[in-house]
Amino acid sequence: MKPISTRSMVEGALLSAITIILSLFSLYVPVLGLVASLVWPVPIVILGIRHGLRTSILSTAVAGILVAMLEGPTQAFTVVLGFGFIGVTMGWAIGKDYPPLKVMILGGAASLVSKVVLILISLYIMGINPLSEEISAMRESLSLISHMYRSMGMNPETVKSVTESFGKMLDLMALAIPGILVLASVLDAFLNYQVTKVILSRLGQKIRDFTPFWQWRFPAYSVFFFLVGVLLTMLEVYWPRGVLKFIGLNLQVVFYFVFLIEGFSLIAYFMGRYNIAKPLRVLVVFLVFFNPFISQLVIWAGMFDILFNFRRI
Image 1 (spheres, helix red, strand yellow):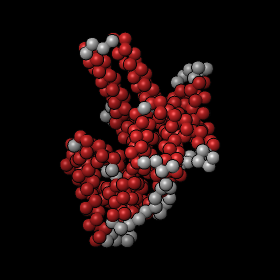
Image 2: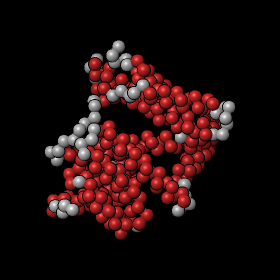
Image 3: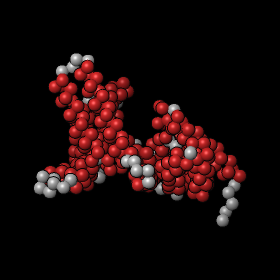
Image 4: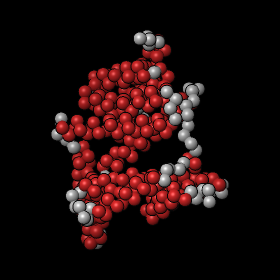
């Protein structure tokens, strides 16, 4: 077995210290803690790229031991399993010079496995379902907000209508948890890849970049899977056991997001082609995120772009 070099040990110690600091931020600092928890795997990814799989695994283990000493074994287990696995996987894949898309698929799969394992451990060992707890907390918040609006003199019928619509949305969210976990895992991998690329470029090391965003196009079978999801939801009427609706809704959630990304890519293409000013580009993005009607138009544009390739037209 090849011995670990002094440089690997020093960098491993420094990056392990950074992971511990990030874990402390994620636990005790409200806003920055969210950012810290999202990029926690980055030091492990960098170690895997620069010094190999063994160094990244050892550093993850050391970071877990130190986090256990500072914050307790539960937090250490969450940190190592929840973030260490994706860091080790992505560091290994980038070190093998895999294409960015393959790295993101492997990293997303590692992130998804970690999330599912943590949920199962919480459910069967601690007896707590963290997902149902979150949804229950949202329902309680909705009840408090509706009570506050009534006390402010708002029309009770309007408050009731809005509360019921949000309650139905929470019911759908409970069914769409698998799809949400898949999307969150993919976003985890993408964010960590991009942050790793920026940091390594500052250190004089380049890794492969994704295809420019305005050239992104998803395969035609994306629309097929979305339509399968719609069909399964409609067939729920004839086989009302919840399974078809569950599968269909999750397919729709995942591919709605795919269409949204495709739609943004289409917008980026045309804004670049016609040299739209940056302030107007920012306004367009703002409207897509905060105007449901426009965001729905972008989703449908993305779906039809997959089928007909408006850029070629």
